Amino acid sequence: MKKPRKCGTCSACCTTHGVTELEKPHATSCDKLCAKGCSIYGQHPPSCKEFKCLWLHGALEGADRPDRLGIVFDFNEPHNGVQSLSAREYGEGAFEEYAGREAVQTLSELAPVLMFKADGSRYLIKGPRHLINQALGR
Ligand code: SF4
Ligand code: SF4
Image 1: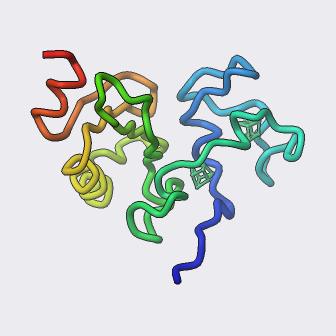
Image 2: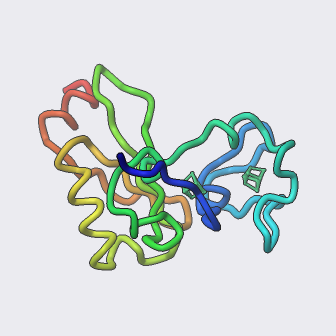
């Protein structure tokens, strides 16, 4: 049996993802983040405690930990019966790197992937055309 993955020294989602309780928007470094990780660990908000990126769920290769790959993948709320994914750049330019392109390609064969650049701007949707159309209600 594979060992469950652990975040370890990764804290990529503390930058890529918003935290409602702290009114922290996506694509900004959390002001609770310090050199050792979360400075309020243990008292960090429920949404931080509950968050698990796709890599932590076991997707992709072990070496693709988000801080190394430069991309955090996670699930979106299903829309029109379609489960889509989001891909948020942690490292600027990660979508153009070979490993990043491969990771997006692999996951976009299974589900639509909404891609967001490191500055939070929407970049691309990749994935099976029929699922993208269904999600968009076309
Ligand atoms: S991006 Fe994934 S592996 Fe990294 S800290 Fe967040 S949940 Fe853990
Ligand atoms: S509160 Fe802690 S765990 Fe939550 S985003 Fe900020 S640094 Fe990360």
